[in-house]
Image (cartoon, rainbow, N blue to C red; front, top):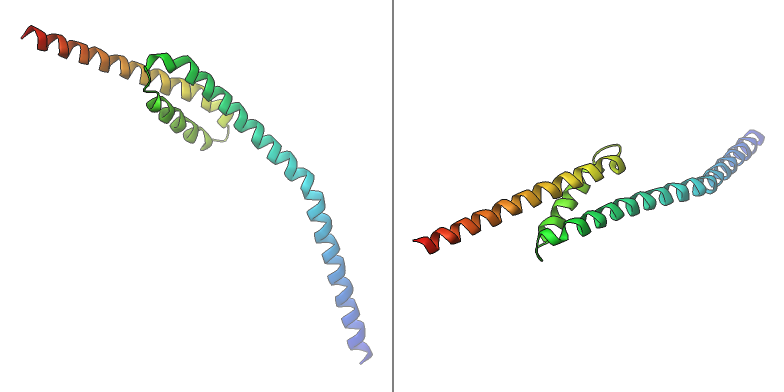
Length: 122
């Protein structure tokens, strides 16, 4: 019976040590977690700043139909987040998407302008 009590005491001591270790790890991880969260928030804020800057630059080209521009920028952001370096990929990709959309929009206007002119000629 003495062995049982000694074994039980040893198990209880190990359990307490493990619980203390777990508690220590939880408390020591909190500063790291806060740093990670702060870093992620900073990264998201930087991407939002770039997105808003591009929106402001291209807003006049779409004459109130900037929803397509927003969708293109959201797509660029989603693609950038799939990389290891979204903060490096997003600005270039977003600018390419916005420029491509602006060119497409200009072609559409030219086609509509040409079509309406030819309709008047007939």
